[in-house]
Length: 78
Image (cartoon, rainbow, N blue to C red):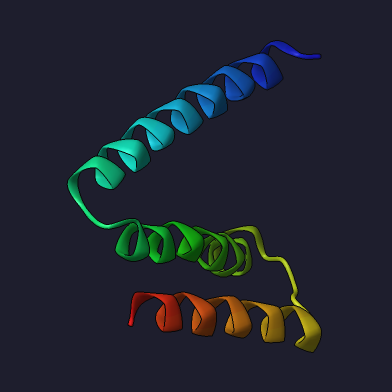
């Protein structure tokens, strides 16, 4: 692997670790039923950011999946 790949791999690991620390702190402070839907919306954000910043093309089936995850997160939050 290149030097650049190692740097991004380490940064990804640090970001994942920080995310989990924040997630578990949120679980300590609030109800799991309110924290979990927010966590699941990260999948939706990844899909949207991949289209906006990486130029990926999502098919209708992919957008349907994004919509279903969004709807499920909203239902869980209510």
